[in-house]
Image: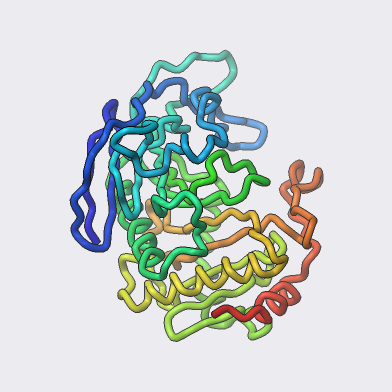
Length: 348
């Protein structure tokens, strides 16, 4: 894997990843904007931080293909956030970041604890092809993407102030995607969110994911090979929720062989294709690439979690009032039934 880094100004970088060493033709790009206004406030009732970023109100919203900021640039044409004429995978600092590495003055409010929202938000474009989707990527591109996730995780965690790095994807306009171009995001945070901290403690103390991978019942397994497995967790929170994990217990994919990474990529691509085939249409989903927060390295089993946002052909999975208010999830599909349906779908 190769990576070329371009300076985009105002502290922003563009990382261009490729399987082979590549030369790029550079163009002008969209102008970087000042990062300001981002901050945290402590909700003392719920014991959790709330993140504020007024800058996000002005972010790009469902542009036409001709104005897409994630497409490769043309020598004569609209400016984009990726000012080269071709690329394989591009990662860059979000112009409308929810976090900032620039320490700012924070407005003090009586009775409210506030803090800097230190961190970085990156955008990762999987391909220059605006019409592609994750599940239509060739296996080599999917393998490259997995290596990029691990490389960004490792690089961002080198900052002593960063405690948690989350690559993720929101897919589908139904769940609020603002850019149609196939892409994901990476958040690098100075705080470990409470639920992530709890999950990491449980991984460390109870080896939960490793035990699931080794002993998951056959009626929850969707598919597997010698290196990786896809399955519905026995306590899935979303209908048709799917996890993909290597059999080897590792923090991230850089600790896997190329063959093992290819198995992970294959299981992920097949899982996404099965979800699309389930209702004969692209399914909206969120995808989390789970790496250990700082302090939990070596006691974590890396896995990818897909949370589909459909429960039937024409029925979206909305968060009901009880779910939003209490955090108690209510699923209409029993995990074993979900696994059975997904397993029955044949993928070429």
